[in-house]
Length: 149
Image (cartoon, rainbow, N blue to C red; front, top):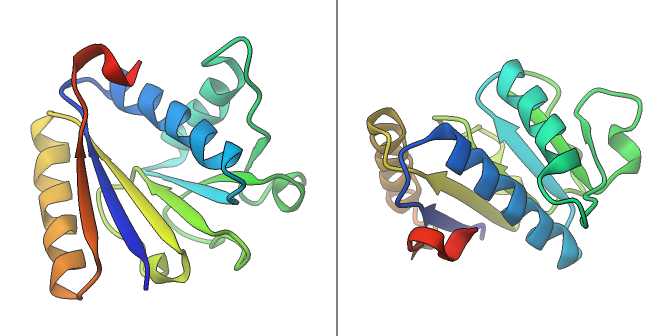
C-alpha cells in the first residue's frame, strides 16, 4: 500500500514550497528512487525544471519534463495535470498539485508539501482526509523555520 508523507512548512510562500520540493527531490533521488514531481500546471512544471538545475551549485538531479525526449532516460520526471502519466517504474511521487491524481496508488511513496498559504492548506486538508478515508497510512512531518534550508 502507498505510504503518504505530508511535509508541513512554517512558511507561507510558493518560493519556500518549491525550494523545499527541490531539496526533497534530491533526497529521494539520492536514496535511489525514481521520482515524479506532479506540478499544479505547466508554468509550475517549467519553474521546477529550472529550479532543479540551480537550487544548489554542488548538486545535480537528473530530470526532464514528462513527454520530452529525455523523460525515459532520467530518474526524475516533472509533469502536471493531464496526460501523459508517469512511467510505471517510477516509485515515488512528490505531489504539488492541489488535488490527488487518480493514479497515485501506483507509487510506493507519495509526498505532499504544505505551506501556510490558505489555498494550499485548504486543498491539502482535503487530500489528507481523502487518503485517510481510503485507508492509506499518512505521516505528518512538521518542519521548523531554518531547519528545512
